[in-house]
Length: 393
Image (cartoon, rainbow, N blue to C red; front, side):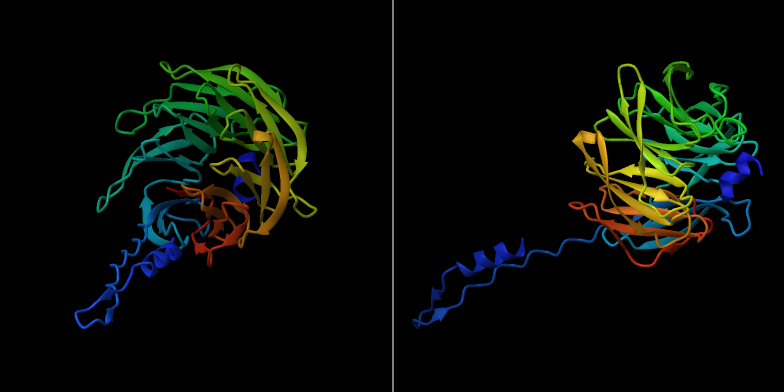
């Protein structure tokens, strides 16, 4: 199997006290009249359902027919299906523009592409704005630069990173750059570079690309006018680690790296001034013996906890984040209630975590205890064909 195909298959009490302190009034007959009850406060209105977008493969047996549409209850986590955005092939990874009005999807195919979808308001249809070629094979990740002007995508099959301009409507222009990871040499068991992720640092000054094939994280500067990338640094993992996904701590000085092939994570120091990433010692994932294929890390908004999806182990690992982000302490793992959790995401506000389970075709939703970081399954998983990405807004 090619590297590309391998990716796809491998306060009520206070109110009571106040009412009790109101004195009784005397009636004309001298009898005591009970005070009038204070008007009841209106019950809080339930929060409106929020949108949930679901990525899939459309070219595999049992796959979807486009980007799945759903809504979720932000209190209970209950998910309700709402249709499909058709006309988008193999949308295996999704991201939204900072203004929330445009959705982007990779088209993970041999001739890779990225597609822009204008999101309709209430009662309006979503509109596919068009697709642009990435110049590489099997794009598997994309992200929008914080300025909203550039889309960054990672071509897994060809080990390259592409840049596309974003216009005022959210549509994509012709590619402005394509950088291929030609060195260092591929790691043990790899036939070539495999770019797996491309993201912007929290300070907005650098673009980092994680390459599983070369065991390297590359740091670039993005020319904000020309849309071109210039390499400024690179960080090597230990040979054969297979780095897959990097997530920054909210403080912006540390990041956490999930290594797919050797079943580890690492804390990384990051310098906003230079873009240099320093990869720390490998740490365990808390999973059982055997290949667990760590997929992705997410960090809570307050920076206190981190979670890791383990595909082979069908579990989620919980870490306490300590020393202002400089240390991860393994707490526990919990079953994901699905098979092969490919992608995880925290809902805005951080009280829910979504896990897209590729092989079981389900999305599991967990309630997040904000104090302890503990995860509790919120009902039965939602059925979604070949679920490989879950993006709650």
